[in-house]
Image (cartoon, rainbow, N blue to C red; front, side, top):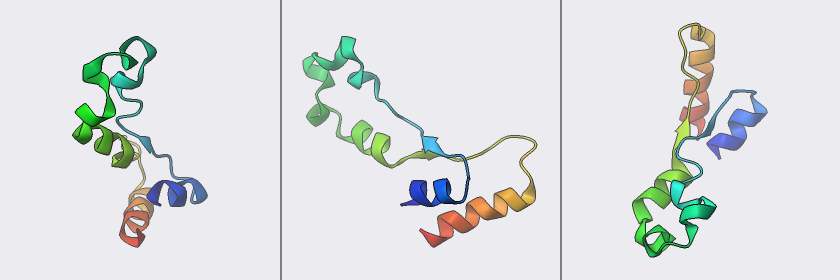
Length: 72
């Protein structure tokens, strides 16, 4: 939901732990790379967003990001 709101408000966000390395073709076939073996990583990949953060980020933009999070 937050990701969708950020798109509408033109706030740059992205999934932080996506894709998981275990999803890459060279690892996908390994037994240890199966989603059932990586429940915490799969959950983090689905839920964690990278929010805008950089030195020139204006205070108004920080407040807009906070507002988006608070509304979710």
